[in-house]
Amino acid sequence: MLDGIDGQRLLQMVPQELRWMDNLKKAFHESDAAYADDRAADNAFPAICKAIDVAATLRLSLLNPAHPWSPPGRQNNKRKFIDFLHAEIPDADANGVNLPLIDARTQQPVQYTFGDVVYAIRCMIHENENLNADENPDYHVTLDWNFPRHGYLGSMCDGRFTCNANAIWWRVREVMAKFILGTEMFMAFERGDNSFSIHCSPELKSIHPNDGRHKTVVAT
Image (tube, rainbow, N blue to C red):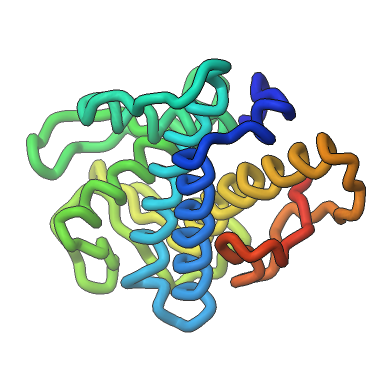
């Protein structure tokens, strides 16, 4: 997901891009806090989805050698969101998740990749719906928080997908951590600072917005 982003370009981020980076870290930390403090069912996904939106915008901006960069119109938000996730997670064309579902709103068949599943969660969050499977929401994607994150991603039944919420959230968190900490790694390298360690899943609540405390970088 960091392919094509030049290290010197990172050191030349304009104030808007630095603000996006800080907002990304804030959203990531909010999601971590919700997960760590037993508020995951109501707050973990809203915050991590905000982080994806900001990170997708920042990544496209950093890929553009001429800045500042203007985000695309609202109609492109879905594509931008999903493309960001699939820069790291295989899509259907790369033998990734490809789920045959029945859209609960239209009753029409749809094919969902991993990115589509997360985007569907994001859209329902905007309708103030937490999709908690225990509450039996009328939607074709639901979130079950009763299973450990190690293991399967979810189960299919009658055109609906019940996510292992812990597993899906943690996988998205890994993608976001890689983007945040990978960006910091490249910036440190360009400055000649090699005082960092490598870790693929940073400790919960260890990434903080704009305070300079974090020096761990994520592995590929």
